Image 1 (cartoon, helix red, strand yellow):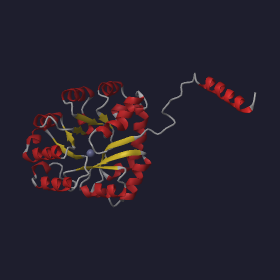
Image 2: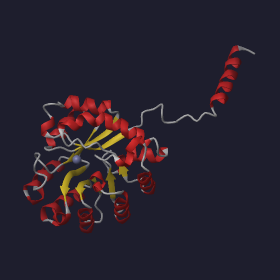
Image 3: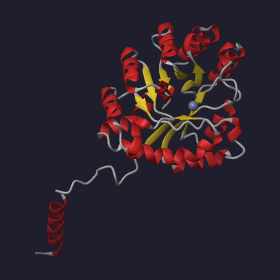
Image 4: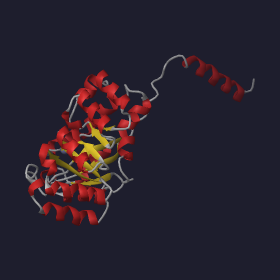
Length: 277
Ligand SMILES: [Zn+2]
């Protein structure tokens, strides 16, 4: 037996010997992730300059990061630093503290339209709107802008407000921030009712408690494989220090799901959300 045949033979024997051991197929690689819920608002800029914020996102191994900020200048600074990584989403807030009043302020519309005209945004949000406020005049103009620019709405809302959005515009694309902080049954009912509703898991932990997908949530994910995505929600500057940990925690619980489903939640659903790619 010459040496190359010998080593080929050895390889076959070796492969046969290890095959019966189930190797976790995903353990050797880093699962790609898109974080669909990040903010880089004015109070984070000084403590964590754009270069450092981008470094944190790179350390987390993110494929893309959806960022919306109060003001949008924060998002633009990150985008300038890393256009390959940042997906800008336009917030209707110029500073912290406008989240309870913005939908009564008509000047918001000009601000949004002025920025959207320049292009490059994947969505409008994350904004806060609840109940009947989603029927107001300013908000109606906001989702008309989303329709005009063919982008999604990132809504931190109760189910009532989400219903009202779709009642006014059945063709809207809505990303439900935090899945409305609702329980799986409520989320299931909403996803069933609204075919163009997507749901982010930001700032929640129950679905992956103990490093495994919770059975109730896993059932929901399997029923709606194309509708969920992950997010950290850096709504305060301190949350930026959690981005990397959140990514590794997400990879851990996602690995307990079937691979194709895990990949959809990890990044594919976010990639398909709108025509930003
Ligand atoms: Zn948020």
